[in-house]
Image (cartoon, rainbow, N blue to C red; front, side):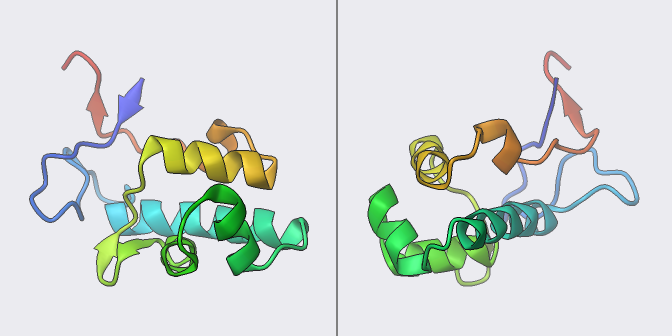
Length: 107
């Protein structure tokens, strides 16, 4: 299994990143796009989605932009991702993209 490294101080690069591999910003934006597509396909507003998932509307709006806070890549709690998946009728593996070949478990 391949996972991104959290060792980067500003959490923007993926450890062992090769040319063409996504950055944390790109990884977060992809999750945001997947959230937006799923929400729109269910006919939900951002506010309703956030309410049903138990998070603030502002927080959810940032998630769809691929951010946790303005200027910082998306980094939600697992419990938040699971709640959003339940609201949007997604499986977690459908929401989170496959990480790039960066750091292998056990290396």
